[in-house]
Length: 492
Image (cartoon, one colour):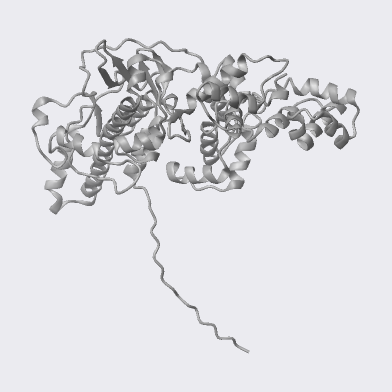
């Protein structure tokens, strides 16, 4: 008996936001610190013969063709109002001024050399171990992204879903949780033990697994795998009962467990790594005696870029003879156009990156002006990404990318841009207090307390209230946890 089935077709509209190749390039360049941008530019100069290093000759700056029109002043105005992360990216055929020197620093000015360590970075050390693995090109890309996503302590706190989304948006890589888990398991075999763990429990278990097999190792493993919460809270009796072990066995296991490192990345940094990798600031902020503040980009090693006149001339010649072209000539025209378009897009992306960085840093200076004038950390006001985004007329995600891995040199030292961000706490009377200041006072209270009788959260709340910071006990507990300060009974 035949069954007739009718296939029903329906139409639906969906609004899907995709990033153009030019937008993706801008976003990638925006995330790079100065040192990596320098490497990226030199790589592009090697790959694209239509891109050259050097100044644009004065006589050529007045020449107008399909790739050079307009004034740099008008173009800067466009960049000031353009958001990098949302909306259509404006792709023009005309390139204005290619000179990428910062506007407020003369080329003849020579900023002081900024000293830095020449040690191997945390990332490079793990990358070297990754390069020694027999991986496919895709697995290597995933591995590099995972290593770059590790926190300073060497743990991976981003979820697999978040990493998959980021890889698709920023790297154009489509992957699965299974593939990521496989590559992560490879990284978790790297040194030091515990690298790549997603939480404290996994970090300790990874270290225990590398020990030689023994009855004591099994007890250690059981304590962390089955009673990790009780172990961190020092609930010995519960552990003895759950695992049915003696107090002597427990004490021997704990003596070994406390030798494990809950922050493998940090210990690595103390020896060779991340904390001592080179820091070259992206911004230079100079405060004068009269209180005025000058901002510039640290671009002394960033070359000026221009289009190759040879390539643009050849492109013009092929374009004029387009009517009677052979297949070879058409292929040559296509090659020339692709290279010139790519060079033009790269120049525009670098220039847009610089303008966005300046806009963002200027907004931070405006919001934190007292600090830049005095250098007193207590003068830092509560400031979040949204505050800077609104002042700079940018998207929050754009400000986030600028703030990540960027540093500023000031009269008072070199600071990460993240240093200037902190939440605010609003009292019942409407007064806004800096969470950074509250945490500083809280840390001082704990440091100076009697270790024989440490303060409870209630007592800390009373002390803070007496100092002019009226916050609730539960808020004290939240800030204490964020500072990695244990509860009172664990501080004895």
